[in-house]
Length: 228
Image (tube, rainbow, N blue to C red; front, side, top):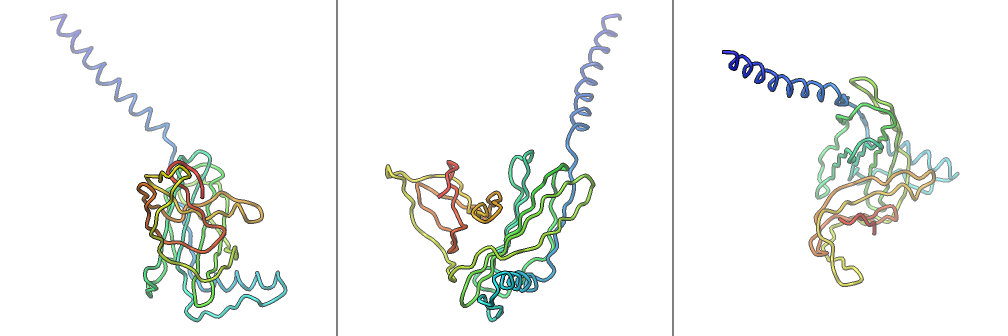
């Protein structure tokens, strides 16, 4: 009889121990928050950015004509030293469609300080491709937070956007295999910032198929971490 009691007590202890450990791990987990971004009028954002750039340059060299000028790409990255991988979002207009670009964005982000929110908007039209970029570093301590970001003209290039189908080879004739990232690199702009992921892709033995933009601010990051 005594042996049965001791067995029962031992079994109860074994059951309670993992339960206590589970509660401990749950209580130590960093709480998440929802961070919201809103760009209700992408055309107005473009107009404001170009007007500011023209005023700063003292000229009107960059036309504000909206003839066939549409927002083509929206990319958003959220990063921080204690966030293992960037939190990303990408929207890409397909085949010059009349699809409406999204205007509100919600992300689940671990609470903490120094969360950098980066936004890239790429516009294309008859004459040029325009890159509008903005960022803000925010501390998130509550369940819901907002990030205010103003877009500014980062770069203007000839209107070259298209698909790239080809093969990249290293000096030894080999080609990378795995996932690659398509980056916008504001580090080349004044007050350099971390590069941001625009989209992902797959490369096999150097063969790849992806869209491209004509800009010195665009780079590819291969599976080995190198930028080209």
